Amino acid sequence: MARQAKYEELRMALLAEMAGSPPHTPLPTEREISARHGVSRNTVRQALDALEAAGAVYRVQGAGTFVAPAVVSKSLALTSFSEDMRDRDLEPASRLLAAGTVRAGRQVAGLLEIDPEAEVVRVSRLRLADGAPMCLETVHLPAQRVPGLAQEDLSGSLYELLSVRHGLEIGSAEQIVRAVDLAETESALLGVPVGSSGLRVQRVGLDRRESPVEATTTLYRADRYDIRFTVRRAARS
Amino acid sequence: MARQAKYEELRMALLAEMAGSPPHTPLPTEREISARHGVSRNTVRQALDALEAAGAVYRVQGAGTFVAPAVVSKSLALTSFSEDMRDRDLEPASRLLAAGTVRAGRQVAGLLEIDPEAEVVRVSRLRLADGAPMCLETVHLPAQRVPGLAQEDLSGSLYELLSVRHGLEIGSAEQIVRAVDLAETESALLGVPVGSSGLRVQRVGLDRRESPVEATTTLYRADRYDIRFTVRRAARS
DNA sequence: TCCCCTAATTGGCAGGTACCAATCTTGCAG
DNA sequence: CTGCAAGATTGGTACCTGCCAATTAGGGGA
Image 1 (cartoon, rainbow over the protein chains, first blue to last red):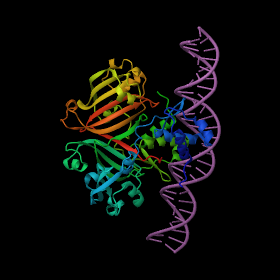
Image 2 (cartoon, rainbow over the protein chains, first blue to last red):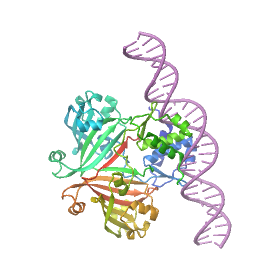
Image 3 (cartoon, rainbow over the protein chains, first blue to last red):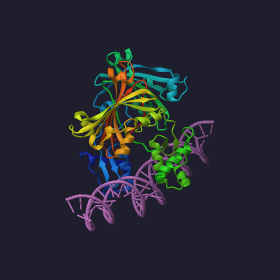
Image 4 (tube, each protein chain N blue to C red):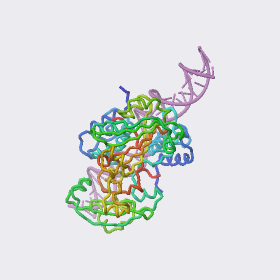
């Protein structure tokens, strides 16, 4: 039983109350929620801030707070492949193609901010959804931070493995998305015609101190995968 | 001169102070900033919240607040093509391909949440960066909300035009990104070989009440364009 | 010398108050 | 009935206080 912050509890409660309400339904006013739940308005605002950031509600000064229309895209949470697939109601699976320790090299070392001569664990996997190929994934991790990883069970969620066995929590990631023409071997592995295009996602996973933990290149089949997310107008800089 | 909120001013000030500091340099403690700038700690936290959300700093409880490593990607702000290109140090330009009023049709009507029989303004443009083709863009807007738009000057920023002339402010947008094989006419317009792949971005722009204002499909050249952004681990739901 | 425990430091959470700014509602004037 | 203006409502900003939780630094003991 994890003791939760009050605003977290309140967030859940509000989420539950909202469930089923049509879009643009007004929520109670902040002052009313505050009174009803016996918390300060400050705490209410914290909960609403979170809901707003998640795209569950929107607020208009002077008017009120309202249920946001059902979002097609659940914003863009940082998810592992396993989570991502389950969100799409697909069963994730994995086929290990290669795993071993190699020297980092210039490019990977740059991404991970380590010495090019340092050793990294490299894991290549073909990832499946409902039994059919979905993407090719190559992960690089500093060998020093994940001792013995290459010998462990790599068929499941890597993020989970990193968290449970090595205490590495990935808090954020930088991604670069490009469209590419697939090479012959790639299209063969993914089971698509030669010359098909694919979606290449280059990701660097960072721990909560913003230091790189993992660099991954993923090549998705263009016909089965898309990326959905919500962007908000940023404040003027 | 727009009167600004204090935490906004403070945010700018901190950003300026941080400029030039190497990554992981600690900022003064919240209490210290509070004292030094003569504002409450609450306000300091608001400013830091914004900076953290923007990826400029990171915070570790018990340790302090630190300058975040230079981000490759300036998070994922909602930007117009014009802004986007200028960020990349490219000069944006436009060639109008077609503009007119048509019936919405099922698909567009669904995205804009209007009647399929309602009229929409459709604008197709070839967008250039430093004189070379970058993407093909087709915008749909409810005709009712943008009277006379088809007759206006469509060579510049559409977002700006909507804001200045029609009072429509787009506060957020939902995007779907896919890799596609370009059709012959498309590759011809973009000036790439037949059979090349492209990046298709489908976007629905929402005003601050989350109601759809604009639906755009953009087809980028794969060789000149990528999408960069930072994702953060979301709270458990 | 090394390790562990404690104390101080730092960000996180929660309560309260006051006033401002945008919006909506109401009612009066025309 | 219409249009506008004043007031009430609602979210936004700012201040304050107090305490909790994670982390770090320092001191004492083995």
